[in-house]
Length: 333
Figure 1 (cartoon, rainbow, N blue to C red):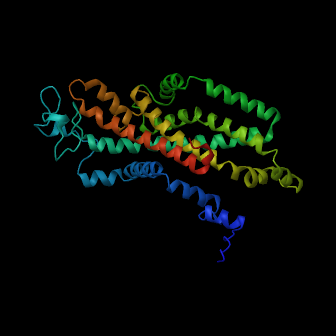
Figure 2: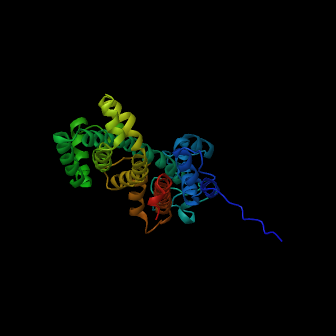
Figure 3: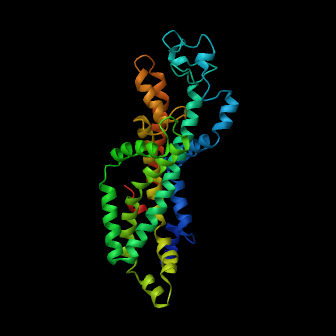
């Protein structure tokens, strides 16, 4: 009886059998494949997209809901607030007409305030994140590639920015701006507050990314592909945009996804401290501040912005971790 010889396989066939999905795929496709397998990342992305859609469609949501964030329903409609200014109905006045209740005192609708508050906080945070990321990219690449005195001065500037007490500076900076541009008998324009907040947040957030990219560029500029580009006569601009920058998108994207929720909480904290957005603009931080004043008699008003901010920050941080793991699985914990 003849026993058949075992089938032999080549090394390439073994590797192909082990990794059939990775063959012939680009780095971007592999990143997307790893990200799709991360259920936490997918759920976090859905939550984050939901918040952005709410912010973009805030006017449409308010129109469909039939309420306005600035209208004083409690004062215009009798029977909603008691003699002390608190909702007559339990749980902050939650009803089929006012889904999240009404604000004590002024009687504004809490649901539309929350929806427009998402719009306000995300608008400021996204703008500051984009500008801070752009500045961080430029400063980090210039410092790492130029070296010498340029690297020294940019490095010292980064150290100063990172060591500066940003919150105390912004608290002291906001009244100075108002005194310079607004007369005592005038109200502070909303656009001035928003622009000042974006500038102040940007000033203190670009340095972290710049320091990270500086270290990356210091390592990359000694690599063979950069030296080969120099030998062929490539200009510094071409080396930066064609050789260095494509290798830096991973840390840039990761840092940006982690920076945005930090700026959302920072904007809310500044509004809570009274140096952010002011009345009557809906804002998460201003809602927190109002909630701390009336929580003993109406805890419901404080719950909604707190839960919304908590869910957003956790979802975005988990999304940032998932994106980092998808780009570089070696960093996965």
